[in-house]
Image (tube, rainbow, N blue to C red; front, side, top):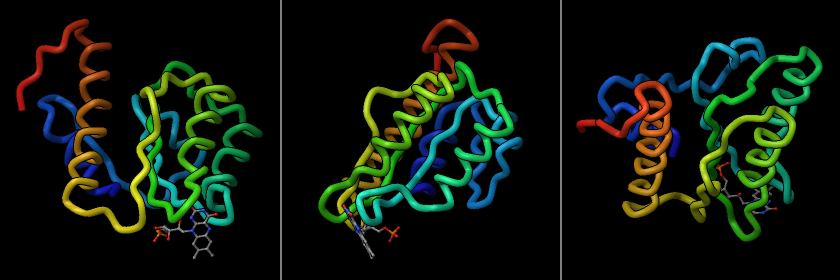
Length: 138
Ligand SMILES: Cc1cc2nc3c(=O)[nH]c(=O)nc-3n(C[C@H](O)[C@H](O)[C@H](O)COP(=O)(O)O)c2cc1C
């Protein structure tokens, strides 16, 4: 899913995407937009993501007004992307895309296309913010 999101971001000219599984709280501040992929385990986000937020909050990492998005695969309840989205919005005052993207278990072609679409939306929001228009070419 994360690879497809990054692909969607890169499809928009002028926007770069870095896909990483390891990021420090301080490094989050280096990006204009942050899309977090997280599966739901035991009705919750995974411990690594929770720790990342805890440490970012403790260190007062400033993510205010950065563009945020959350996505994730789930089995039956799918809380994690919603929780992540709420934390990015309420604790870190980021600007979230409307709703988190949930895909049941392993994404099929349609699920992957939704991920690409999410990436494009993130990139377009960045372009709009930077240039004040949606003048993009794919
Ligand atoms: C131990 C365990 C607990 C899980 N708990 C939940 C849950 O509470 N809610 C849910 O929607 N899915 C739950 N799932 C399903 C996972 O979210 C689903 O398998 C997802 O595709 C896992 O993504 P991953 O393969 O990237 O880890 C659980 C799976 C496991 C193995």
